[in-house]
Image (cartoon, rainbow, N blue to C red; front, side):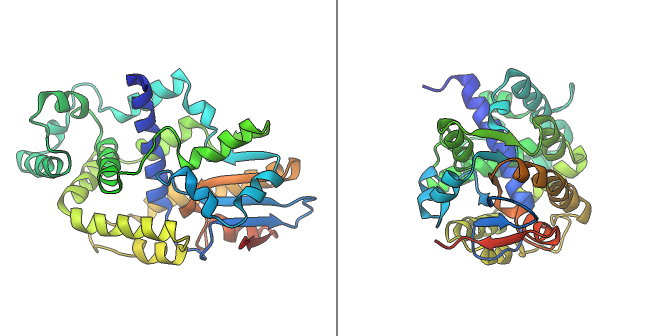
Length: 312
């Protein structure tokens, strides 16, 4: 049975991965698993594009996945999963999800905006911020944390297929530990919290929260398109879904995409060669980090590696 602390931690972990995936989903070929060779590697490494809300059973649908796990001696994710369960990480994330002392959502949003938020929440959850218990839990959340929590609830409501204790993205590190293999992370918890939860001003966070509230149909259509494309292992279709624009301030700004995607990809490329040279490695990162001219696949090729989609 889940304790209250474990439930809170699971939700917060999902928030980080939702932010990472949603921010990073761009164009790529129609595969999720790639083999990396060349540049003096004695054995190939692999990289798999993940989606944290996918069921673990989806692993069986990815050609060559089990063999890739068997062939590698260690697994690296965006984060080292074990780090996320520590009390220091939990406290750090809880703090980042909360507004500064003295602020509440209704002090950031005007009366009309609060009414629109409440209408959205009522439709999604059957209750809103006028409920004292719900207000106690959510009124102190930052707009970013609330936006992502609502997006998670929307997914769960529509799919009805979500096991927070057995996430697709965490499967690979769990499997490595089970097999006595090493695990590691390309980033730290502190970095992800700073980038994904604290990387925007409160005013911009508020703006994006209202974009979600006021454009639910558009957001659902985009989200549904991404999910369908991922399960079809069709990253070209993900590109089409993510290319949907509102031509408004709700669209990502160039500096936001650089911070959330491009800069992180470039940083990983500086770390991956030494990791792969030490041991054959399976990298399991958000699928949106793989594609595009500034994506990990292209950057690896630029660095001289051979990167091939695994089809069987």
